[in-house]
Length: 183
Length: 236
Image (cartoon, rainbow over all chains, first blue to last red; front, side, top):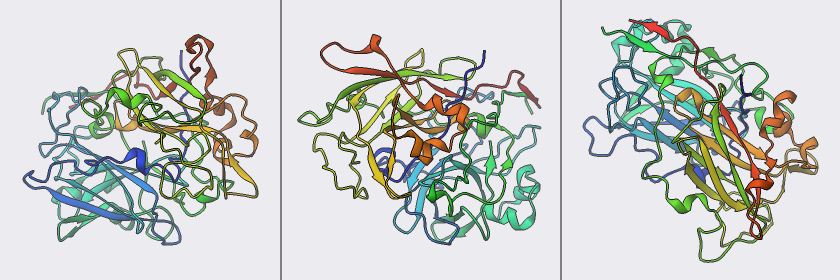
């Protein structure tokens, strides 16, 4: 017997008092070796910042492992892997994290280091999902997900090096629209 | 490399979720992506997800009527149900987040400018973990309806917001729970953006069996997240 899935609805404009935590942006603590900030802005189709979005992240540890019972290699305990950050009035979000290790894809080939992002916002009736890759990673060239995209679209998924980490802007619509994935 | 058996999740069948481009809901017009989404294979990153809750949820977090010195105004209600996957299997120990307007239809959020009173005894934010059988339970007050500026004389149907994690990135869901018989459904484009056959899944049912006599009425809302692929994907 199959049960009908519950449909998605927008997070609405008034969620930040409920869905943000003091430690939401802290995928890793400040003291973590190699910690950096992954920051960006969210823009709408008119190029205006989106001040009422929520960005959530999910990633592997630096060893490419997950603190999760379904990791067939065994769960690594203690790596949260998750961050959440509401955008501010200028559409800015940020999480403090570390570079994830390489994770095998469905065919066993190692993927390039990546972080999955969900974006929720007023005006988004369902989340949109994207992936952050990192500039300067040699493995990007052989990543099966990146390789399947045209070069101009691929660029929207590669975070640029910044002073304290990386920058990854999200363009919901229009010119240089970020690649979003169906999962 | 060691063999890895990665059980994927079934893709959502068409007719489940609202289209991102739903122009009746004005805010979608500049925010819905124009390009079709690219199918992403379910790798380990997608079939795992944050296991949250321990240390993040206090017992008082599920009773929104007891988070302040006094009691909030409004009609006390119990909202309960199960979190299941589409095969009917319980999703245990998963974080459920709830947020809502107060009984006057106003959120305790700085940007909500609706001229209805704030309630100093109501924040409207709850969280809990499902038990080993996927059950959750909140005590709260029934939210009020409120106007918004989507179209002339627009009012949101009365709703509670829910956020679910499930156990995998691909199960993440944010939705809204509605109340049976709401006369505002017909003019609410957020509710109506969902394909008609699936809309009713967002409506709770009145549940006399869970009411507390001389205390609170009860509504039941079961939440269904996507299920596993039947056949694991073999990788090596």
